[in-house]
Amino acid sequence: MNATARGSLTGDRSPSAFSDEQIAPTPLATAIRSRLATSDSELSGFWFQVRGSRSDYAQELQKQLAGDAVVVLVVRGAPFENVNAVLDDFVALIQEHRAACEKHLTGDGATERRAVVLLARNTLRLPQVSSPVALPTWFPRLGGQTTSVIIEDLTWRAESPLNTAEAAIGEACQLLFDLEGDLLERLHAVCAQKRAATDSFWSLIQRDGDGSFADFIDGVRASRHEVRNPSSYRPSVREGSSLVARIWGKTQATHPDGLGKPGKALALALALPESAVASWHRSLVSVLSRPSGPLTAEQAFTINVLVTVTATCQMITAAAHADAYPSYPVPLIRSMSFDLRQGLAGARRVLLSLDHYTS
Image (cartoon, rainbow, N blue to C red; front, side, top):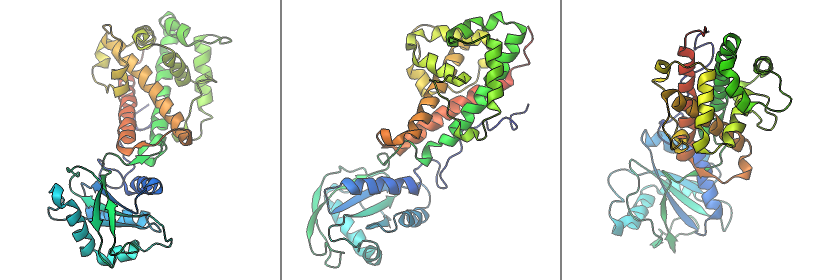
């Protein structure tokens, strides 16, 4: 079966309509609301680097923040480069955009917190400290007052729950489902021709009550036909009814220095030729979990599969229960998801490149 029929092999599509290297307006708006909700300041300043069109980004972000006392302004020219003139530049920008400030910062509540979002070409390279600033007399509710303001750079700090769209959980689920299918096809072929090659791997993931490995594979392959929406595929390590769930459970219970054994067993079960594992993506979690001893090329590949599958299962599950976990910087969530998806996609490419197995 060709790669197109078996799902995407890229794993790199971005959920953002803007630059692939920046946070989309929706999660940034969520992060701004979250910070405002816990802010002790009547007026907050948020800086954000935009690599594409700042005007388009500002328009979309302002729309996402409709109903909030937040105004989005574009920084042009070269202000905010002198630490002693930061707040002077801040007031000058407010003065320049008086109409927008009056429109979006009016608010309804007498004690409602307000914020000015500054979209710039670069990150804010100045110390971020709270300083007093005298606001123009026309400024909504705070006009003529001196208030303390800190301009916080959210470029790398804007946080979001783990189920943010930037995590691309649906794509991770789909890739996990597709990779499991590829593993099952290869294991089925090897088991049918040379069962002894799969015995070691089966002994590691087998549970009480299981029959033969061939029966397990046939059962999992049959149950996969009941999955109507692979983009919502979420295995259960407790139930252990899928191959990736068994891999997840075994890998999770194994110390990194002990991963060489299941890695070797999986390599034998897949009958990997050394030349087949020359090009694939080693995920960051795989690097961090690498055993201290030497590894063959086949073991390095299969350990990457074991660890990447496990981390992906963990991330999918955590996203499904995002309310139980802290929020994290969106760039971190996005990069972690991208890295895992690249690892899954790379493993698929290797498996799909293998010749049909014959003993």
